[in-house]
Length: 329
Image (cartoon, rainbow, N blue to C red; front, side, top):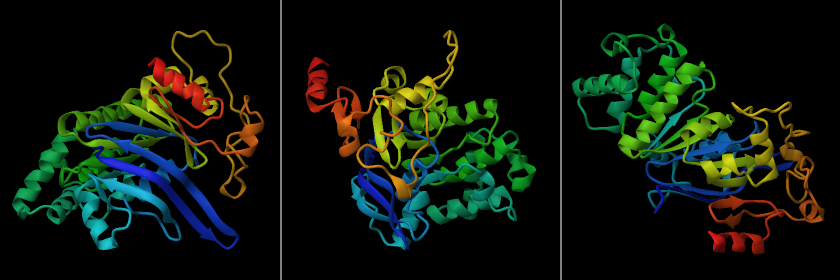
């Protein structure tokens, strides 16, 4: 059984002009110790998917359909007080800007100790020892000294490490990391990504890594889900999706990334822009930008089709082709 199972998730935003569907029929699973990368352009629905899992959707946003199960138990219908106990204890969160996750008025040690005391039975003295251990584990130099610093006294990379320490306080089973390296320079990015990989390897923690950077995904994740206009366009092993992408959108994403050692005069460009939630086209949402679109793409919306090592939501891969590929594998 997978650690996290998301089945047919639907997130809606009721408005005066009607209901906007931001996440539409999204399904995936994450195993223990696995890093699942979720990638796509801004507005694809990747961050909202993570927010729905941890139960932090801002009203009027709501989970309007589907199921979210953690360790086999459904969590999407839990009352707020029960979900609050799961958040932090079993699910940790790392957000893009560490300054929004840290209270500028309190020392970082105080904030970590408070979180430890909330989710464990440790005494205040042992909670401070635990906070110090966490700061050392995430690579804070001179942790004994910095534990009494305020957030503004730390660099961006160190603040992000503190946020990761906060997420690890109660040894959660799952971590939702939403663009955890976007505001950091490249060398610090590499250290944070190495830390996330080590969590899965050493602690069996499952990680949902939300990002728009395919380079981050290729280096860190085991599998990747490519989202477009609130749906999963393609999901599979990183080697497959990066090396042999199937969905035309994924092909465009991969072609837009410069590669060392590849002689290429011009990178691939995906013409147009992602549709607004108020203007999702009929059929496949990617059809206005797709170079391979044909009649069926403008009439029917494709569901993800199972392939040998993943799924792809594209009419170019009909059931007969998918079955042949699975049989060949």
